[in-house]
Amino acid sequence: MMESPEVQCTCNVTIEYLNQAGQATKRKVIRNATLLLGRNELRDILLRVDDGKLFQNFVLREIQLFTRFIRDGKSCIKIVPDNVQILISNCPPDKLQVLVKTLAIKYGADKKSSKQASDRTRLLSVLPKTFDNISPVQLHDVKRANELRMLQNVHTPVSTKAPKNRMGNACPGRQVKRPRTTSSENCPVTGLKPAKKAILSMPVQRKLSKEQSHVLRTVLCGKNVFFTGSAGTGKSFLLKRIVGALPPKSTYTTASTGVAACHIGGTTLHSFAGIGSGKAPMQQCVELAQRPGVLQHWQNCKHLIIDEISMVNGEFFDKLEAVARIVRKSIEPFGGIQLIVCGDFLQLPPVIRTNEKKTFCFQAKSWRKCIHLNIELTEVRRQTDKAFIAILQAIRIGRCTEEVAAQLIKTASHKIDQDGILATRLCTHKDDVELTNERRLQHLPGKVHTFNASDSDPMLVQTLNAQCPAGQTLELKKGAQVMLTKNLDVQRGMVNGARGVVLGFESENKALPQVRFLCGVTETIKPERWTIKASSGIYLTRQQLPLRLAWAISIHKSQGMSLDCVEISLARVFESGQAYVALSRARSLEGLRVMDFDPKVVRANPDVLQFYSRMKRERLFMQSSLDDYIEI
Ligand SMILES: Nc1ncnc2c1ncn2[C@@H]1O[C@H](COP(=O)(O)OP(=O)(O)OP(=O)(O)O)[C@@H](O)[C@H]1O
Ligand SMILES: [Mg+2]
Image (tube, rainbow, N blue to C red; front, top):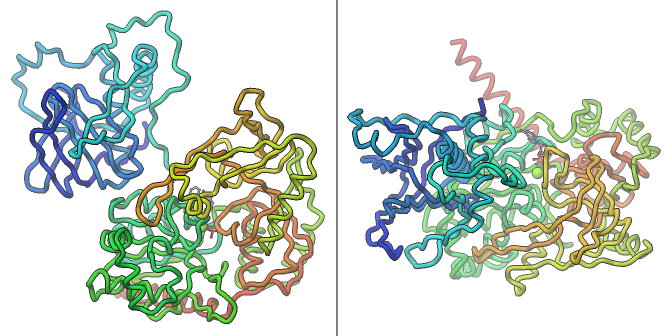
């Protein structure tokens, strides 16, 4: 049996009763409705819409399903015979995905099964009306549903028009295509070409660890949480799950830098806040935050997520906290917004101009009143080698024993270049990165292939450049060292940061690059789409190849990444935590080469160390009080 998450979710629902022309003649809006899938006494699928006092069951015997905006918590189910459509919005995306996929699979499987009650049975039925929760999706359901889809792919290649919403606009969505025939017996089975791939499957989510689940539960209880942990403990992984479990309309996903924001599908904290650098006097910041578009964020926001908090300046945090209270007209800390904050203060600190004061967020005046709970993740997931994890833990706290130094110095002789794939050099300075990549590409023989991004709004190129991991223009040659900038297929190792080399280009018109990756896969790379939220709240998309040149990247840009093979030069390290960030990107010691290791570059900020030891003391104190209490 497949894993069966609960097929239920809480969201806003609009029920529209349509006329022949498809216009709504009656509309019922229910906020915070509970949706539940079930079956009646005749085994029809039912959708129960419960407003907390009353519920209404809809029989889903013939439906159209619109699924394109599931990640935004939106979907639509049209009940064809009744001419009714149920518009779902503001639903936690992960829950909605499970509900919609379960419905699509069960509905597809039912169409293929012979167990459906005939019209005559229905008419004559004297069975009492029942509602049983729908059973978990089984493998045979998926198989049956897909068999029908394959037939239908051949027979009905065209999907019908999307339904209209109240504004008369087409309701965004891709439909689960339905067969023209109502039962599978009517489908001619012979002589059909199968569809290219089985289309339906249940979303498979990697399981959260115990400590990660604890954080998720705490967040769902509404607590303001700061969770931390060393590099690779799955903080960003967990954040994505938190985003998927919260209602999208009131959840804002941000990070301190554009690259980090992109890892979790969000925007930068600065663009959410709309107060520029936050250095202007308070009154001016408030005015900026009250501009149309910006004010809306502040007012709608109930849950604010911030990744890579170590790079947010404490003064900026205080400014945001005060602005939040003023623009939301609330005396609660951060204007009553739930804060879900994560990062590792022992990694890179805030970037500041010379003569500016650097303060960490935990040093902000409002930090303590804003954060209810500090939680530390302890299980490292990026690396599996215990010895390497121990080296990294020592470096993190600025401790470089002779033994640790010796092990890192030894890596200088590592032969990590494999199959024409060279190690990526992590550089302390941005200029070195650009120069290295440009020069190395120039020195390669052969023709340059240029790939231009296709942007939804060419006027906002700068926003896209800042937040999207794919550049507007990508120049490649045969032999170019490249890195994936998106998870394409986690199972096969085609993940963000996977390293490869360009073997050549297709001969067809687009001349797409063929790339061999370290994980052993060779693949033609096709354009991918990124969607980002601009500060005005509108969605921008960029279509581009998910590749970037990978002879070199900067340590600042690498924060948050996992890398297959890295070469590091630490001679020009200028920040505490910088050496640790660079070293901890490597998945294994074998995949790491440190060129000129000097223990002096290993530095941890003493204020941060103090903050962490206080946090640990408080945790131990709480634990021992709890133990005493249990004993009593
Ligand atoms: N529960 C999990 N199951 C499977 N893989 C996981 C899990 N948690 C994390 N990972 C994997 O571990 C790796 C590191 O995770 P992630 O990048 O989220 O760590 P991080 O704590 O954010 O690191 P950093 O501090 O460097 O940003 C990723 O490849 C991620 O997919
Ligand atoms: Mg991270």
